Image (cartoon, rainbow, N blue to C red; front, side):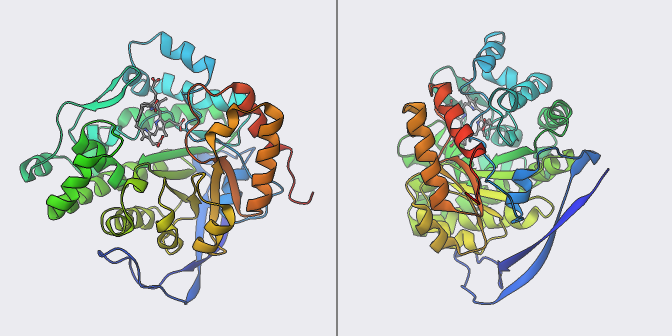
Length: 385
Ligand code: CP3
């Protein structure tokens, strides 16, 4: 049976987000109907995440972990051991689908997140990355000049080269067989620019930040191109059947509030506005200062890192948004009973309109017992208790 839910959102909205950044705040609220269909004609056995993201009543919060696919499971290591490198796994739809579904089988989480990487987008635009073993991403070529920016592919042209991702989505949906929703994702434009200019991970991303100060117009041109490629890419993920989309702005907190309002928030706003049929989560690590900006964006869920107390986040985003997060990933190194206790405290602090998660991706050496205790604490929780 194919069916759809209609959820009504009260969204504070009046004017488009200005290029300068912050939207003029409005006290006017209006009702807007959004339809979140179930895709591929497949009924979901566990639709807790979709219901929670849509603001529908749930008996407990759904739970999943950022970076659950690939970092922690022995099953993943076994899969990876048979392959020459990370990219060959990302680019093999069947194996990527297997890595996607592993955490659902092994941990009993309420959602799967696609096994891929945010760096497939710069590659689709023409800037290939390497994943250097135990070091991280590396770009042989970086972006500095207008000629280099102009040479990049964008929009549907860029998204067309990511067929292996779309095939992985089809394969993952087949394997999930409706057991849980599938989350699609992309990097936020600023975080993608940071890698394209810096060329690799960095503590300061000072080359990428310097680019914003030295070449603001060119930075905006590059952000435009990344945004348009990202919209086309996410739209295709949605057409393929992902149920929810998350934007990772991992390097948000490296910008100050003013720079963030100029160079990141408006582009996130544009992506949120373009994705109409699925809930969108914005996770901007370290950007406590941008929570008010997110409150007026067309996203349903706001992800939080562990440095923001739930009540402060709620005050900043207002009563409507669903909050996601935010247990310190290092809490999972504690003995399992401590993990359960801390998780229950966190759930109590958030109350309803919450999706349980960590405040950032789970670290590779996290004990599985800690991860299981976290999942178990959420699954045995009840709002009525
Ligand atoms: O959430 C999931 O489990 C889905 C898979 C996923 C990966 N990367 C797989 C991956 C997701 C959602 C990402 C997003 C991603 N990639 C982000 C945003 C999230 C965050 O952590 O802030 C960033 C910044 C990247 C870029 C990236 N990819 C880095 C810095 C690294 C090296 C360090 C590391 O292990 O994360 C990667 C490699 C990568 N991406 C791995 C995995 C499973 C490790 C590869 C391996 O050795 O097997």
